[in-house]
Image 1 (cartoon, rainbow, N blue to C red):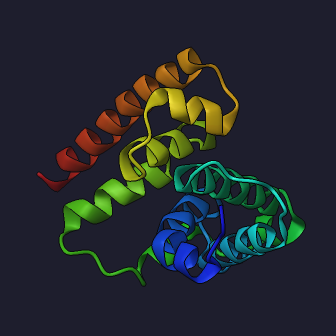
Image 2: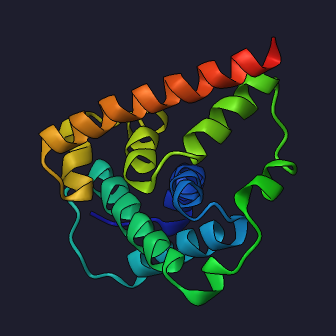
Length: 160
């Protein structure tokens, strides 16, 4: 299958960025992770079965790069993501609250929420991408929902 990098970049760039930002919580690091993933695709001689296979591979590579970035000295000594949230335009305050709640989740829950709700993957597909059992993905998804519900209810109570 021939790969048109520009088409792939246009089609999946925002999704890859969202996945990377979800992990790094830093705009520049997320952009770098996406760029590196696309470069790896460009340099790769891997044979892909379909466009869905390319998308899943890119998401997996982007997630791995973003995770590696988070372990670096430079990442650990940056401005917190909350400061960056001020730069993001939201249509209404509940969107901001939801984004903050998702970003405040522990890493193991946050990426599963992103892949399930924002990317539309099924639990079986997420298990394959993250190399986890499907039951682990289901459990983490359930736990993340409970955590989000608690966080969002707490924020609503503060507004009263």
